[in-house]
Image 1: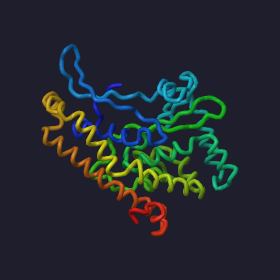
Image 2: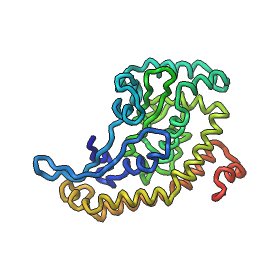
Image 3: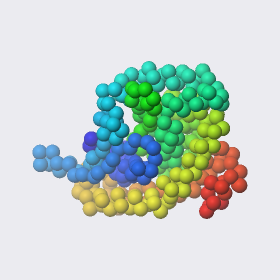
Image 4: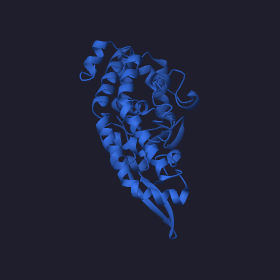
Length: 292
């Protein structure tokens, strides 16, 4: 598909794609590959766009070998993109009816979901402070033993200068009242799973692992700098065509702001993780021996 970079088209033109590129190949979630391109329509210049993968049933076929005619794909709150909602509704009904601190109930839920995929989706959404976390996709092949997986996309509202320090781990994704805009999106699966000490411990350790590897500051800045270099020469023509951003220097300032946020985010997220789970100084040293 072709994207204009969504709400970020007049700011950096990189925000959503940058965050996907950071986690691609590092986290157990589905992502949309990215390639910048120039669009002409009947010979008329239409500016800088991006070619992205579309996370649909054919994506599942290409990346996971799934039968495209036999998958359930759900977006947000019960928007059915493929198949139906019956299996996922049954999962949520079970979660609501059972105490997941009970080992049998806990293991039953784990048999139905890709545990690492759910954890990584929560980690990615909260690390990047995606304020539109309700725009989510999750899917499962309709075969015996298949598990629900999560996709990571639509980061146009993430990593903004005014919001990147907020604790949306505790106050959004793990809010029992719901998550996303106006808390209207169901959070019961992750909220109830987090009541199980084993799940919570594994989640904390997985978050720390990604903070030490996937979200290493130098690694992320290298990705951002490389992506910036790929579109820099085209930005003057893009700006002249659409007046967005207002000038090349404005765009450079916007990218610099994203770069600054990226350089600060890992340290801020360590504090959020400690506050959310009330981690001791000794535990923080175990998780981040080079920082604490």
